Length: 492
Image (cartoon, rainbow, N blue to C red; front, side, top):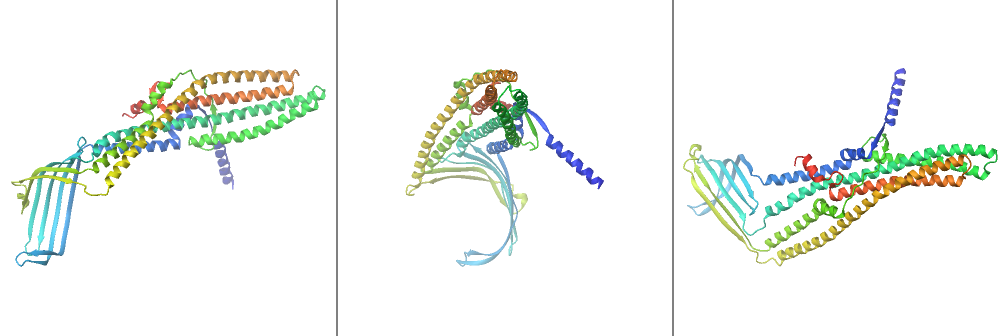
């Protein structure tokens, strides 16, 4: 029984320690944790890795491929239909044979023309059972060749234009999403900062209103203030306690939201440090627009859509015409009844073929596909122009907001300092009886409003800054491209 009590006490101590765990975070630290540990960060990084391996696969297809094909054993025992030339009739004959083969093949795609070079070597063995038991060997010591469509669609040419663009887009989408995470982290940071400031102010207000109410009771006894003023002070004290309870609820909600976003333990008590006034930074709309056109993955997506539409037009156009292809190879082969002779005195093997496919009657199916592809290209081009204008407008307005927010922070900080001094002065005047209750309440409300405005100005500034970074993928504070920094850190 005594041991059980000790275990319960230890568990309670552990729970209290967990619940009492507290960390202090700055805005920079919150952003670092979000980029490293948030669930959205994990998702974005895995999406990028999918695009990375897709690009690696494309690059691998441009290299020579080596394949080994082996048929270790293939055994037949059945009755087949054969022609008897002596009697000029078809007859059924039993057949029993064993076959094995193996070989190597090398293939290299030729992107410029859309064809493929190949080289292969092969050895096969055939054993017939029955009336005549016979071994046969067949070899192709070496054979090299080339095949391609002469007028057909060149898939390799379009892949060379589209696949690198897709990888570049995947990389910049990762950076785009990480900057979006920065925005969300900033939004959650200042939501908690606002709730924290409201809670701290509410605590001070409870203490202040209680003190003022006690002072009011003393002054009412000597008829220094009226009954109505005393009731107003008591109402202020009650309202202050109610406001503190509501502020405590809002603080817990905001803290849980930030902890969840950062993938922290839900019992973590977070205390935030507001960032200082940022240094003056001038960003021109022209520079931001140029960087957005160069780096923004939305622009890359538009280019990819146009390229894919042009690819479809090219494919359907060439499919609507006749097609011709060639296949040429040069090599050696030999057949023998023993393995020792199968590679002796090989015979030359030459193959050259030209095939032509001409559509004669398809009731306009190919022409219809080609026209659909052209119309789709026109639609995508028009939509791309509209989307580009929307993105450019967003960049210009965000830069304008950012430049304005820098001045608003200075103004909000000055207003907060004045509001704090005004409230302190009014409170002192009220204590000595030279200010009424209405002046004190008005001064307190102005201080609270100034506090909210200052935090809001900081929030709007940082949200605008990270949005500009997201739209341009450029760190204006360091003067570095986020894409170049990513390539350097990953050795690309």
